[in-house]
Image 1 (cartoon, rainbow, N blue to C red):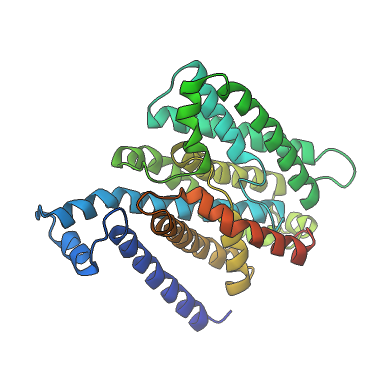
Image 2: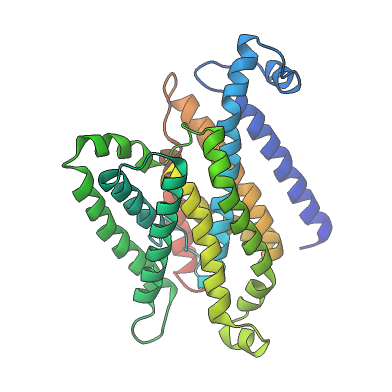
Length: 332
């Protein structure tokens, strides 16, 4: 892709991102005029009703931005290390593993703080990723896209059964879990953002450092090994970055699916296979998608709202079918 065209795509994406952020601040139970939104952002001392409402919505909008970018990058790096066009934290079972450990924490040790949620979610996501990859590597042919997808689906089903076994007999746990499980950003707070931000920053930095090796890995394991890339190590490091990003977000927002599937695949069609372009564009695209999904949920569900995980699933399911039909579940 020519640099000029890439610059145009990046410029349009950033413009859409800013527009979505402003729209997110405007829509809710009470609609705020755009001019009032702009005024509130530049006059922090103002105490009018509109300004107070806008400032209350800022944490939610910022968290949507962070969560969407993290899930987009996580999906991009997982697709790259598995060379699987349908790799995604939700499809590979990572989100379900994080959910299981969070539910176990709520059930047995009554966790309540954001840091406790994050550490348990990361542990669950990491163990599940290792387990799914190990299952998929068994047998002839090693790890293939179809084996990864099947191992992830089977693992998700098994872990979901364990979650049901823990929540159904316990009304208090069920009440704490039932809204979280569909994926929501409505409870975003500055405290939660501060808790999750260090993990996200580390995950993003590791992902960026992996870009050159991931571009070489796309040429095939034999070629990558011949060019001096340790494929096992780069896959391990990349998987750690992906798990860190999706696990931290899942801890606070619940298992939001399909963002990591849709966005990297779409960006690959727009900007080409180069990870130097896919990674930043996936971050921007993921943020836009989650903001749009959150806005749609608020508008459609008004005066209440639909959780963002419901909207992303509604948008993502048909796209998964299209990708699977087009790619025929082959490697990238």
